[in-house]
Image (cartoon, rainbow, N blue to C red; front, side, top):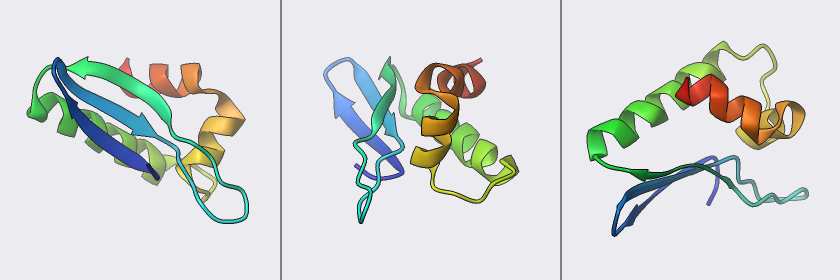
Length: 79
């Protein structure tokens, strides 16, 4: 998965974020699991996009997560 990925599961949606390819490939991190509805999953994606647009450095999401850590990123998006 690259920047943002959604996977349907038996219990809802899994959202992964931060994957990259190229010279410095990076596997995506799991941001949320068992998100019950499509609407909630898309709302989380909208929060990710808004966070990215407001971020001061224009780098890939994976690099942002590497800088701040997945836990802080998760708090910023899901809080």
